Length: 104
Image (cartoon, rainbow, N blue to C red):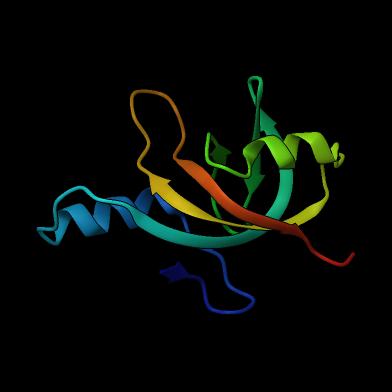
């Protein structure tokens, strides 16, 4: 499980690169991240503190529940799931395994 230190952010794209550069093969990287709900094209996304881009929320058993919640953009949430590296011009993604709204 990859989790940032409390009060600190991280760049998910750098995490996947660091794992690959360390000689480890592909496989699921479980990540827990807190941020604000945003959008990327027609998909929900997470804007992380100190990260340069978005983490796109793609698939997983809880993605439909997140969409059905109709939380507005800017809502603070924490999401746990499997991290996927960026590819082409697309940002990194996260298969949503669980999520919850954070208190304002």
